[in-house]
Length: 283
Image 1 (cartoon, rainbow, N blue to C red):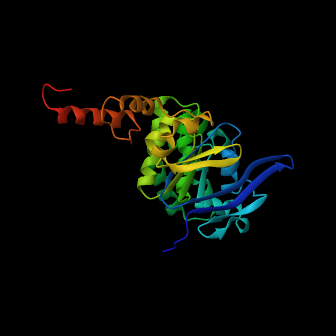
Image 2: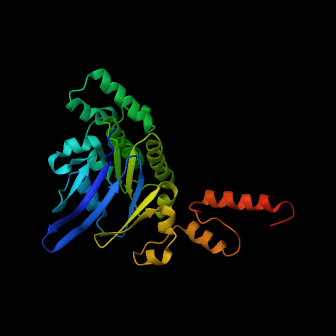
Image 3: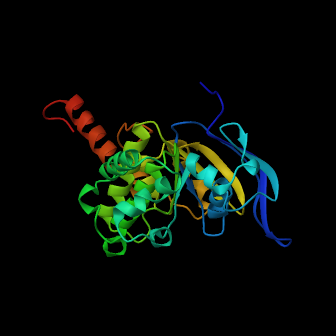
């Protein structure tokens, strides 16, 4: 079994031109089966970093290693077998006439046997809840379901790491959580998940690690509760922790809440536990 991390980023910079460095001297390691959120203002360098990871851009300086292999020696198609990339706008990745053909496209091009293609497409569509949509025209689906088709295409290729760039942008509440629940289930099954988002509530609910980018650099990299626990430091990035975390911080002055409240469900559980511990007639 390889001991190499899923991704190692070694002093990577990328310049669109001599006057504009979009990312500067990035050093990160992402291990297998992590669930990582990347956050930061527009222009911080998040999308540029993702494009360098997936081979759509190549570092101006520094190196990226995918499971120990230098990505410079790997084509975009080879990288895509290791890292599946779901763009913010799923329509840019859809072109086939049916959902089945969309998910099967890369497998057909790889010369896979028909029976194996059918099995992989079926399994991938089941994973994202679109088994009944196999014969549908992808653009006719909702935006949330179009994003699921792209995720299914990535799964069919066997990518062990999935990167989602603003996966819930323009989605309603239900679609947001459907997509993130798919990511959570894939993480539970052993895949590495990296997602970029401006939705801090989703970071608190789903991510285990948060990377904060600011002005083309990594400003902070740590556990979600540690990052959101330092509201003053985050203020310089114009990022506010989710409202429930700020509420829990205010309540902590009055009642003995734990430090790790990240979601409404966690706060509710702790309040109920305190009430039970107080006994009848108390609290």
